[in-house]
Structure formats: C-alpha cells, structure tokens
Image (cartoon, one colour):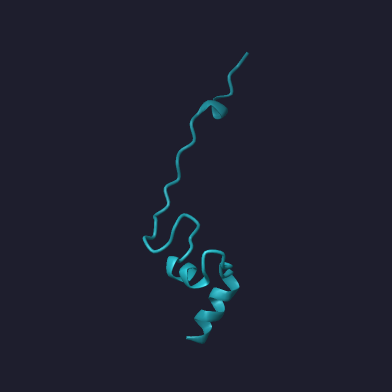
Length: 54
C-alpha cells in the first residue's frame, strides 16, 4: 500500500503579523470597551461609513 505523502506532511504554520491594538479576533480593544463587555462588534460596512465621514 502506498502512503499519501501530502496527508502525512505537517502543515506549515501561516504567521500573520499581530497588531498590538487588536486581539486575535481583530477587535479594537478601545472600541470594545466603549461597547461594553457584551457589545456588538462593528461590521466592515460600519467601519467604512466612519471612514467616509472623516
């Protein structure tokens, strides 16, 4: 029986640069503090609307 080498190779870990302002979810900690612990995160559309107003 032939081994499937693709299945047996360990995956390469993709390293993404981490922003010190955000956590693993990409949440702005200051914004989350303003929303409260149970606040809703802003959507990408809401982020774009804020950028247009400036």
